Length: 253
Image 1 (cartoon, rainbow, N blue to C red):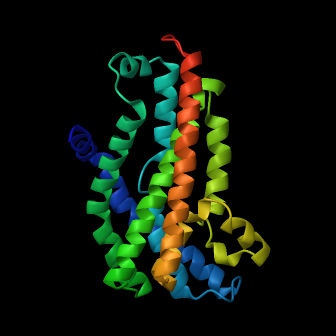
Image 2 (tube, rainbow, N blue to C red; image 1 turned 120 degrees about the vertical axis):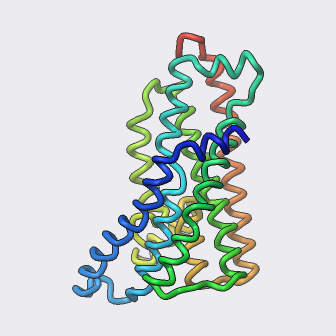
């Protein structure tokens, strides 16, 4: 409840997301109009591109993942996590609760805007079943993203500074998740690689399901893969946390 109140209290950030979202979308809109007019991607329809970025931008700005990674770094480096340890408060659970509260407020505030824009810009209004499948996959994909960025923050136990890792991973995620470009524009050889990595499950897979549909069996496979990768990342976080505590002192690491 306290985390939910904190999320509502941060009105400036919510305002920025609420009004910055359509602004960013229209910037992408005019950019892709120019690209499509030059036939750079002849297999892509304008309605698909506009719809794709309407939804992908909605997912990308859902949570300040980079800032969270930096906050975890500061809490470790400053010794603030000693407060959690002294009170036997699970550090990871607190961060997860804060994340859940923030995206709850975001979804309540921005989802109606995204749905309206999807209808106006792309002339797509998905049915209830498809919409629920999308939301479930989008939620699990977002949790997976959060877990990875949390792990990057925990690496401060071993690296002191994580900006280099953040920059490298951000570039990787932008390309491989479909945030920068729809993965279908890449050659088939690349797509085979994308299919065995977890990144597409964060953004591209939910968006693709929304526009191209899916079968129940394929939906369940995607859910299984998301849970599988999430379990691996959380297990990695537990190992890093346990090893990091051995190096930790109240004055830093």
